[in-house]
Image (tube, rainbow, N blue to C red; front, side, top):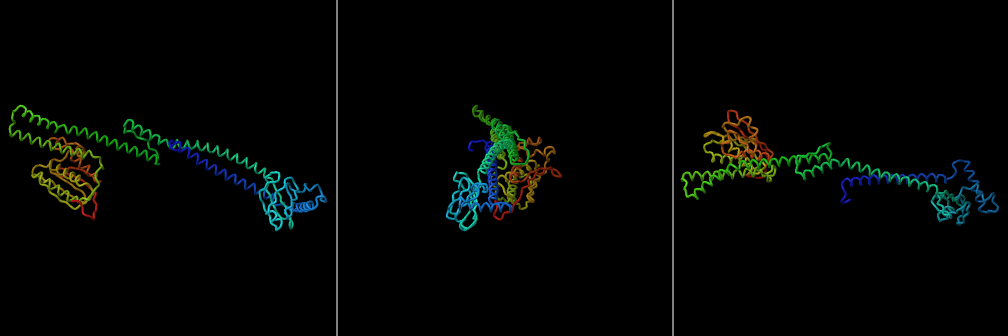
Length: 463
């Protein structure tokens, strides 16, 4: 069946299966009918069923023996009127006494029955070539009678039955092929729709294509899986487009500033007009800050450009130690802000650099919005890491957007940052099966948190 379509293969398989079933039934029917007809024929050879018939048969046998002993002295015209068709009697030495046309061959088994008694029914062929059913039975010591019945009618009936069954089998096979074609068309119609949808997506790139899903069978599950796949691809493509568009917008500002500062330095060199040393140091410091901002932005873009779930295999991490290191770094980077830490032991499975960056982003965000001399409170309990600042807080209408990529509150656009820090926090939490959130704290300020599932390790963990 190589090269055939699935529909044709299914049609052929159904037709062959049904045809084989019909053929088996037809053969079984023929065998059963043949057996019943032979039983009926054998019962006719067993002898007369009534006492009158038995007495008549005894008289017939006596006349047969008289005729065989002396045909000239026998009564009647060789007793053919009293003898069943194709019947003859023979002695133990093999001599035959044929009383009707077409004698039967005598075998050793027949002579043994004549000599020792018993009876036997078998198929045989007469001297004239007629197929018969023969019963051999001893009727006197040394003498047996062979009575036969023609098999011509039985064979003719069986031949007609075989032809009828063959015709029925052929019609059944054709019907099975038609039914198989109908079944294959009905069963494979959803597959055809799925094939058309896949070809359409491959030809046009239209990932909005969906397949109607009906039922819960394997085909329906395949359609649902296709819809889920195209939905995931659509989200991924939209995410990439937004990332590219947002990245282009965010990169434009630092690149423009870098170009302006570099152009200023180049004009100073070309014109020979020296820049004031103080202004030059300030300009070089600005270039360095812009390069650092650009480097951070590129790193953030690379991190966010990674598909969710596409991260390195997790490793055991002492999360409380990782947070402690991040708190120490935050204190060094923001000496004017008081950072407190209340940490309990918690172990997770994940990628240490990614989680460390997420924790550092939470701390940097809190420090950025804290006033000089303010306090940032860090707390880790049962896998929930919360970072609270005492700054202005977040407008209620903006809370749902704080973890969006490149989103920055209108009141914070003058502050440094690309709007990617909290998006990285949310993605890092999702990578390990956790979640991130933010709310305004009671008494002022904002509280951001991540919740990470914990694990128990018997071996040393990564600190």
